[in-house]
Image (cartoon, rainbow, N blue to C red):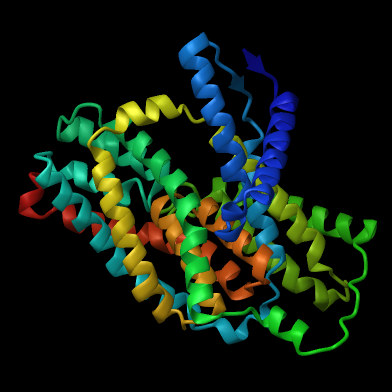
Length: 396
């Protein structure tokens, strides 16, 4: 059964609402900040997998809108970044990059070590390491193609896609609980929470107007159009910047130029558009998972994933959180770290949104995480993988 674009879009909205309802009705899900798109998408994926296995009934969605949703999300993130308010977080990005580099090495060494224990080729350990977990589906596909051709490894492409998918699910599930654990243990509060409790009276926020929403929408679409164009223009360069990062940077530029031309700007409409875009992107991704195929394809590699989860938990809580300052922003950044260390930048952003929707904003985290997770980490990942693949024990 095939569903056209508009019907697919409506189905995604419906499952997002279901995810929100389930999260609100099951306290443990809300307490540990499981993102609504993950809950709703997984519910649909479970039902769809059962229907396919028992009744041979499958649903095929038109997902042509997904790339646009992702670009709108990142453009919206840029539009919410008032650089005047983020000067105090200037050191956060380089510190975060310092945290990431040794973790990528540790993640790969973990994968290789467990692969050797399972009597697998060590390259499979890299596939179950930063190639698919930090790198995601795109990096996994690129390296899998190389390994199949040069190293003659069978089924490596299917394995890479499966592991990237499993990582996406796990990263969205465990990021929120880890951050909530840190928030509870250290009694952390956002600056917004502190401000609200330090005053007896809180001014009611002005409603979002049609004009402010149109300004935000026009700016986001402008950033998307220009970002796609710039991505195409520089696609043949030595270093390729992905389209969504262009969109975010343009969003930042446009947002911070508006006050210079006396345009008053309300961040809230841009934040709303960005949040909705990300939620719909993620729920559509989760809805199309074939969980039976994922379970059957992964096999013994699930042991590597479990080992990676343990390593990430201890590294996130003992290294990332402490290095980032042991405050509320550090906890939010740690949730993001878990998200893209196991899944993708979109998962990282969803983890942060789940935390901030409960505890208040974290502007520095929302600026540095897309830059680190979508750009700098890819450069580090490629460089470190090149070094690891050159080591003798990798078998060429």
